[in-house]
Length: 149
Image (cartoon, rainbow, N blue to C red; front, side, top):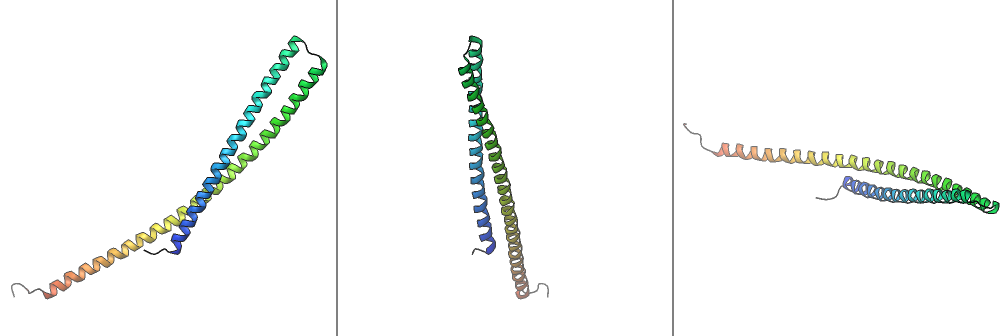
């Protein structure tokens, strides 16, 4: 059977859906990496804050205290940037998900049209076969001698 424009559209839609799926998977991986980096920063900040608490209990000079506070502030800034990056990456994941779903719907539409086309072809072929069978039966009856006459 030769390829129809619908077959071409279906194949193109399948490729677009697959590409959208690959993009979605990549965006999800990136989001996971950003989330892991954020968690690592949070753990590091908590550890560093615990060191400051230990240093405060044991006694700390003002210069060291200032260095701890400055470093914690820089960690807080890094955490905020990481949270923003995670939010932005999650938005990319959401957009990629919507795009993939759109491509999937388009592919399903073409598949539905192809199924209807194929069903129509099958019905047409079945009618053709039924007509051929009916014609054969009728021609056989017309050639057969009548009984009892």
